[in-house]
Length: 263
Image (cartoon, rainbow, N blue to C red):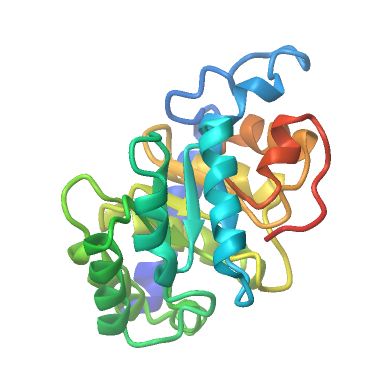
């Protein structure tokens, strides 16, 4: 069986499983499972939010504001570029807010060993979670071995207890590629699949979250990121199966308002 046949077999198996099973709910998603449109309140959402600032022009003052907002609103984490990890870990010490570092961001096109080194350094500096961008070009070329080894390079760099999320950049992938990427991330032991960097041509959609949740099943995380700007956006993603939200609009979301930008 050649590689294309293997890919097709994997996709067919996953698609068959998806069509014969009920939609999988998000892990521990008691809020997401409530049926009433009014059941999810802004006050329910902080535990879902990775409060995010990934702009290249971010200043230390802006990073400090990000951390202070996360501590004030009890967000799950702050999500930052790796240069800010040590600073954030110090500022958030004792707050209960975790530090998430992006790796291989935003293109995912660097050498896998470099991604592994970046992850190790971020963890040594205090990162609790790693959001890596997968090798998108290798997936488009159906070089499954390269995609898998790239994910594994970062998985191996993660200490026990460090959460690994794999960013797919769904706006650049076909439905088959999304399914296959999710399956590979699950197979190598990643904890989450994540839609987007927020720096490409599109972000999270309800359709992609639904597909990703049904592909990975009920016991793996799904993170919606890119374009989650309002309370209504957040609720839609959670109801579709997301159990983490990456957004720079966290304060607006928990205030029941709309934010101004994705990241």
